[in-house]
Image (cartoon, rainbow, N blue to C red):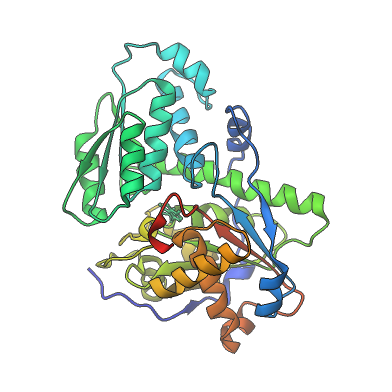
Length: 370
Ligand SMILES: Cc1ncc(COP(=O)(O)O)c(C=O)c1O
């Protein structure tokens, strides 16, 4: 374990770093799902004015494919890829095709560890496919999230262990026909987390398409909440493989600064975590496959407190945006950036800047900040 570092981190070279584009097949897959629709990109002019920037757009993931968080994007695509691979198919088959081809006696099941949203998404996909699911959770997961997992028909196991160790436990349960669908990677466990990251690319694609049709400039800054850093991985990969290069800022809870500490340290270290209302971000170790991309492509990484996240939940609610603590953490981070001349300058923010905040969950997904 490394001592956590919560001081803001900046990397002036990140804007000029470029990488290869990631496969963009997830959007086609998601479009094949019933009830798919792009989530809204909501302008909040009053926020922009109070922060001294040109435009603030909130990518609102409060209702995504019937669930109250973005995580279903990754879980659905990864499960489809993993099951399709079992059937010898190199692409993600639509879920109804998979259900038909697997039949009722496949013997397959899905396993995941979660601090709420990911496990709920895996349980939901298992339910759609008619497969059993076993979901493991650490203490402190919102009752609503636990109930929702059980309501999907999954078996819920509550463990008195920190999140990282719950992941280890889920990994031990998996094997053979019990498929681990985990949103973080480590040595020897890469394919599924990679597919999850590819699934998240849909979100970035939607922002791109929405901005292209609305006549708004491309973003100058995108703020992304991080737990294990898989969503941030997708966002960095997306923007650093385009000619347009917004600044990219990561936000974490003060009690779980795994990405910030790793960036300061220059290595993917583990930190002890504490308690936070930003449950989905309460992770102590950066995903292995995310690390090199975050190291090279993240402009800034900073932490916020529960009080800051709570205030941001309330502020967004006043503007008509339903954002749980993880999603609202991005606004808390933007406030920190805008209040700090050096950070503002480092990220190139000015009175005309367009900022996108990724609001990754609704208050229903995690009512703790309300
Ligand atoms: C609502 C929400 N936002 C952000 C995150 C962070 O995503 P990642 O763990 O990929 O960094 C999570 C993770 O579970 C989440 O549930």
